[in-house]
Image (tube, rainbow, N blue to C red; front, side, top):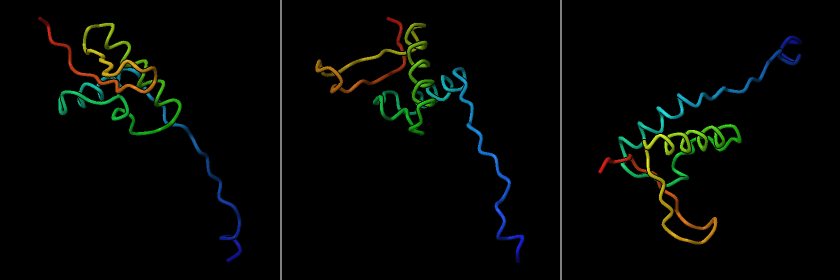
Length: 88
């Protein structure tokens, strides 16, 4: 009984998030949905996850993989959505 009262030896580690893996996730989301709201991309509301997701979408936009559209002109209140880039 006494051994159950002792604290367990545990180690909490953070999950590493790779930008390339996150870009693959975003591509899959866009393939399934076509167009998504910015907030729909966040499955985990952690600082690291938000940063990696944001860097991923910026890189994808830079490489013409996605278009970023802000539907309202008010600063920080508009809906930002993403969709696969279509060559015209």
